[in-house]
Image (cartoon, rainbow, N blue to C red; front, side):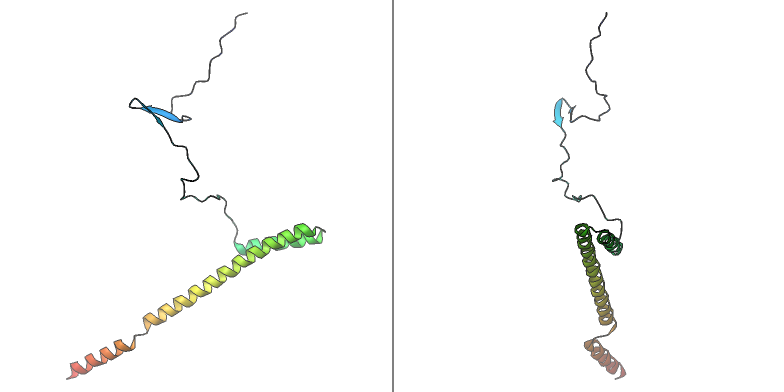
Length: 130
């Protein structure tokens, strides 16, 4: 029977899947994307979609469920997670309180005229009267 010669894989000329290309007669190699060169991108691509308060509640509930089912090790693990998120919530609340007090202090200092300004205004009024 007649056997056909197998062809090699031929890439399409659309520019994809090529690590190098020829431009102006020179072979240029494209640099591969490297995680060290992309410093503007975070290394961890995951994000918590829930707030720290909800995650605290979630892990607390999971810990209670695990302990009630008899798995103390898993319950302790969940309690450690809950403790972590509780610390995050406390830090957020502390930072929020500090920002509020700083904002209040800033607005009170801006709204209160200084003693020097009052003295200067009084001197100007007395000069204008004379």
